[in-house]
Amino acid sequence: MRRKAMSTSLSELKTLPFWRSLSLSEQEIMANCAQIRQYQKGELIYSHDQECLGLIKVLSGNIRTFMLSDEGREIVLYRLQSGDTDVLSASCVVNQITFETQMTADTDCRLLIVPAVCLSNFKENNLPVRCFIFEKLGEKFSDVMHQMQKILFTPVDVRLSGAIKDHMEKCGKSEITITHQQLADEINTSREVVSRLLKRMELNGIIHLGRGKIMVANKSRLP
Amino acid sequence: MRRKAMSTSLSELKTLPFWRSLSLSEQEIMANCAQIRQYQKGELIYSHDQECLGLIKVLSGNIRTFMLSDEGREIVLYRLQSGDTDVLSASCVVNQITFETQMTADTDCRLLIVPAVCLSNFKENNLPVRCFIFEKLGEKFSDVMHQMQKILFTPVDVRLSGAIKDHMEKCGKSEITITHQQLADEINTSREVVSRLLKRMELNGIIHLGRGKIMVANKSRLP
Image (cartoon, rainbow over all chains, first blue to last red; front, side, top):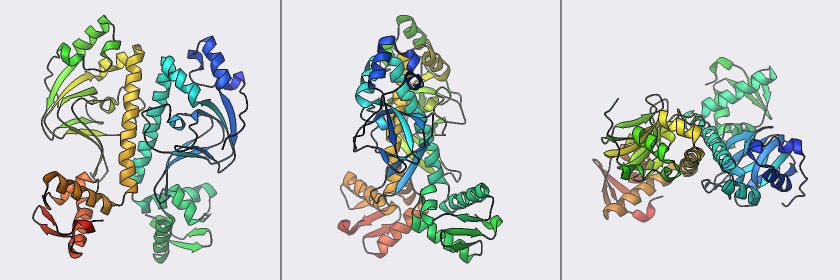
């Protein structure tokens, strides 16, 4: 979707991490090309096969970055929060990014965007900006690897128990309100796997299942 | 293991991708710190919890980069061949690398190494070298993501069939000589999983199993 972009203010531009390394004329160019865009909760922000966005800086809201399997299964790679900068949304500018990702708004979002065309020029002609792009990419590499280690090395039942315990702590009760699909999304597996594991826990007397609810009967026996 | 390092020749140093961006005095510093090291097949080259190596350039041989699970299972991330440069072996220099990897010699290897201490100085004081380090890291990010997509999104039986077909093509016969463990290593799973899948294929009349051998009876029915 092509959306109306709002112009930026100097205070917003100054939050760009490489702003100080730009010359006055470069700052002017950046001010003319950078944009503010707003997205609603659930909206697609970036997809490798659609508009190449550019560098983004989250001014407010939360974003989910994920890979999509052929069957449509989501593997969450990392989340972005207010203040975070990211370049995975600029894959057309950074040749090194050859894998396919998507970004969705977890909440209503407000983003500062340096569009791909503009970013590409800076990348070629300004070494600090070029370096910044690749350093940012390196950071995301680590974020993703920690996530992958979790997915590949932690058994799915342990991940499920961990998620249930987290929710119990958050709401301070032994009954949590959550769907199997939400749990599946959180621990990067399918709803079917979550339902099967929960059923087994129920048979073992560890939990009781209600509609959209899980009552933990025996927390110490969670895997 | 601390090994005797051999001094480098100019022709070897000139293969460093950023050599031309160094001043004459920087080239001299690089010549004094860069080393050649040799490793034997199977030898550990780099481990996150041992000596921080620095930037490596493979002059000859092949290297395997992998993560190790708590149970000792290897997840191969990528392989390096003659001519490849890598910086994952310099995690102490690159703050962005916060995950743990290891490198092992798949064959006898000869490496040009820019040791961590020396690399660190160049990273801080030479922007082209700094950029090179992060660009290289970005490339590896993509290599790893393609591998992760394969592991997470391709069912293990399809990966196993693919490996068997590859070996059949390589040797031009329908009988291949390979152990279950070797196949498991190749497709990033455990030996138990490979043995179970092969047994099922045998029951279905697709293959016959021998000692260290697999005879493919019906290639078209491989998953």
